[in-house]
Amino acid sequence: MKIFIDIGHPGHVHYFKNFYFIMINNGHDFLITARDKPIICELLETYGIPYLNRGRGKDSKFGKLLYMLQADVFLIKKFLNFKPDISISFSSPYAAQTSFLFNVPHIALNDTEHTDKVHSRFTYPFSKAIITPQSYQNNLGAKHIRFNNVVESLYLHPTKFSPNQDIYTFLGIESTQHFAIVRFVSWNAFHDVGQGGFTLVQKREIVRYLSSKMRVFISSEGTLDEEFSEFQISIPPDKMHDALSFASLFVGESGTMASESSLLGTPAIYVNSLPLMCYLKLEKENDLLYHFTDGDNVLEFLTGISDFPMFKLSCTNKLKHMVSDFVNPTDFLIWFVANYPKSFDILKADPDYQYNIS
Image (cartoon, rainbow, N blue to C red):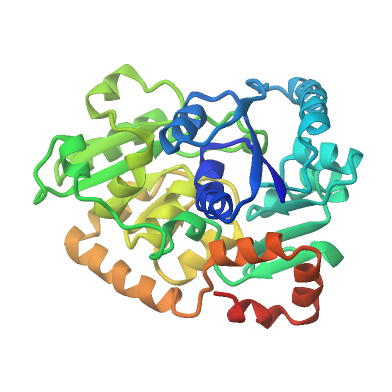
């Protein structure tokens, strides 16, 4: 089988890497295209995954529409040579539209409800199946397939990920030292328009307080303010999940990293004005994630934590309860793609069939 994948975000590399390697070992062929973003390219090269660069993309609404046309033209040329049997992406409009033109079934993954308005115009109409977590809060109609887990488990499921303690060497600290990961985002994504998190003053207060309790490492999507440079994390991108796993705490504006922390048993303080997506809401309901729509009350919450190690231990125990009946999403995705379209019909008739996949 010839499989096409489009990558538009660093997280997508993680979503599909296990799927890619297992399917390659099973004799399937791949064409992968990726957005020209340094961390995406670095991750793909670190994992040894061949890819074609489809360009940087744009930040403005008009620029995004223009880039959509450019990307579609680029993919059309690649499809003519590769001739894929099936296409899969995390709701990439470019992948969906090009697949539609070539009558290639496109499978769209998504876990972010507030993007449905955009995808209902540019992605879903051109897709054959839309796969989301079971907790997804919107009904996407006849094409909708749900699985009982969250997308981040595609790479953080215990059978796929084991944290490496060499992260302490990369961080330059002793293995007995407690530390926090703080994440700031750039707010340039299409769905981030009009949204926000910490103010600069609040960033200072949070970093100052956490620094009095433990080491602080800041990960920033954009250019980090000079005053925080001493805290900037400097590790290979593929080591970030090790850092999140051993951290005592995560505080940040990134929903993906907040969810990753929760799945690794690390308490997550998530600060973002966007409404909670399904996976974050599930983690909040299980007391693994604490959501603030702005930074006003975050410092007060942090000062109320009397024992950070015990706070983490509590989250680790709650995680075990949440994941007790989860399916392995990588096994699910491999089965779905390898058996499509029969797999689609099976799950529409009996959604619980997913528990038979291993």
